[in-house]
Image (cartoon, rainbow, N blue to C red; front, side, top):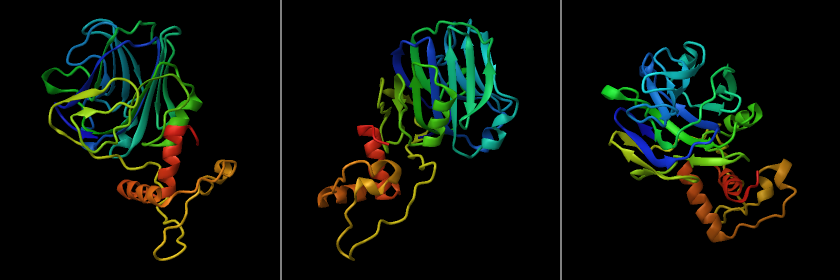
Length: 287
């Protein structure tokens, strides 16, 4: 999804847990350097105590904040200018917070970028989730760029789990952890953001486009081998991942299913094997 100034999405009120992980992919254009970019928050246009926000701040750092009043907040920051190398690129941002230990961590591209061991112990207040907005009086703080695959967990993910999410890519599945909300953002139309888990988010504003994110890491686009010029080859699940699927029974894809799989793969610009692999991972837990 692409969006810019004065456009954001809102969910109904969510009861935020004590342990939380916010993970998503962003692609922010270089003309946003030196500007506040709201990524996600529970603050909306105004802030109050025990609400959180995730932003790219004006000095091109990634900042996670929990407000202690309408104008003060605890803050976990990466080093100054750390985002300067990521403008115009897809990159995952992950924040973990544990209000029992009071520790907040920020990961950029799957790697720890900030560990704030004295962040503080705050009980997050129930509030809506705002996607693409973080305290925006006078029209500032809206998101500009692309967002994909927002996942929020009611758990403090480990560094290994964060790295796995980064490796999985823009269309990667959720990991095995308590999932509070999941917005793939790979739809092609609509005035709401579909939730695979959690409440639907309603879009406010008109400055947005449904531009499905590219597959990152890039998918193999090599055509499957053909047995003839007119008959499509049979596709078996054990052709997809030799290290895993060879242990599974072969699934013979019938003609109509194969045709549907080809259409979906063409729409997404990927190899049918990758499409089948993604379906098995997302809906059946294989992979």
